[in-house]
Length: 127
Image (cartoon, rainbow, N blue to C red; front, side):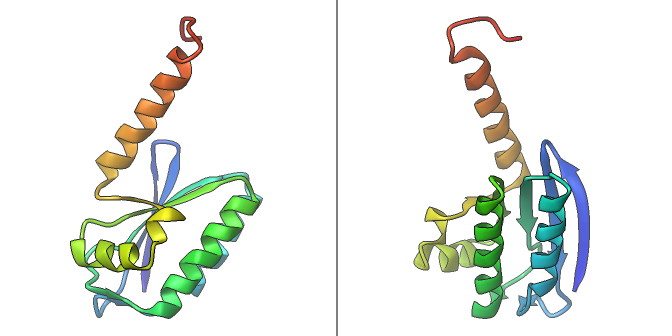
């Protein structure tokens, strides 16, 4: 498994690539998330480019990461363009626990929209 981390807006983007296009174990992700929480980085986006299947054990680790982030008052989201993988997440109702975006652009545009509504939502001018 190869992991690449880059900033994406206010998020840390964790790109996880697997040689076999199948994600079986995400234990390393759990330790990364835990470390980010300890550093005060509370917005994490996880992306699985090129995968065609994700095992239940990997989904269980994702849920542990979501729980850990919520306990730390943070947010973990998933960026997944593969409709089959999004379908797996939807059939498990994961979209109720984790925001799932089709692209990095979709996440960034939601972040901009939230920022704009926060600044203008009080009826005053932005600071």
